[in-house]
Length: 541
Image 1 (tube, rainbow, N blue to C red):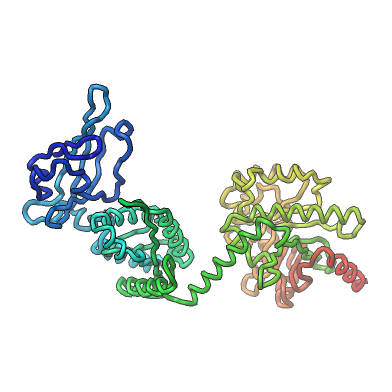
Image 2: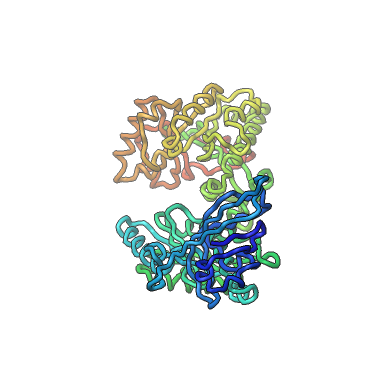
């Protein structure tokens, strides 16, 4: 037991504390209490004496004068004066080692690294073996990250090993914050750590976690004489693509870490260099897309793809498609960046800009008495557009009302089928409010995922769309049955992505209301659309 003043200096220490730390009582007096231990995972309370808690408990690593260290449980109790202000603190230290063999007295400490409180090499091997067995049974992937703190040895030599141990504890705490609930972070030794990503252990998931880890290390670390910036090199190995056992994954990830370090501090790398290049390209695309979405008038354009009558071939509608003028690659269709926009949370922002352009185009067609004004227009909404917390705080129906359109009876909004299955009740309320604006609603992507026709029948939709691939030779009976069921519910089926003569042959005879795809016509800018429509009408006449 030790009594310290409000600043943490030792006033009195008993013989048991001195035996624990290997010092004399007269040597302990006057020293800061932190001289004798380093905090593990729990940060030390600090601040003015009157703002500190009256009692707290934490695990610390006690250092003996001979350099040996061992885990200790420290309890701190404030000793208030007559004014109820703590002037002294009583600190009780409980040794977690046995007196016989100097080994941890509980099973917990056998598997825990005492400096950081993380799983050590023994527990890491056990968890990795279990994770690999689980991944083999379920057929899921697994990722292993090998993490090395850049230049830590030089830092440790400069600030001292006691301060270095405390810094390792802070590094571990920050990295733990980047973990998902099922992941494991362990310390191999020195400044090397390993992270196991179970369940979704894909390359993309591993990159996201690695980037979160790098972000967690960005704020400066406080040291005795100032602040310190630290980064980590991260190597990533994937099961079963890179290796199928513990040693193979760890050695492979370690090799990838060295590859990352050669690029400079704070980098990551995969074993497969082609995969590294692909993910780098993905990141570059997302950065470009994020920048473009905030000035859409410079980088995006709305094109229109005709929807045709399957019997006569006449144009009976249009689908508006947002195209991106991507640097170096030119004009890109929505399929090329839709998933990235969803991941970045940009879908609603882009949808709303597209809606404004579509309303402007339709108003211009009406004012010029263009035949295009007679055609209904369909816009496919992003997955996030049915959510309450949109980026501007406005539900879709409120946004449309504020645009003050003359009429919306010509507009159809297509909702992804998967979104309706996730939040049916909330979607139902919004779709009914949209229906009061006289616009029409469709369900898109019926070929992608399960379709609950009973739920679909309760929604105010008038059309449903699926791709031509659903009508392939083996699946044509399914496509025919789906069309019949939709008609029974009063929902008109539409086939999209009819891009080749083979696709057109596959859907021939299906009871659908309209078809569209490159086989009939690609998406065109508004100024070229009317010329196409005139030529189409003339050739058919």
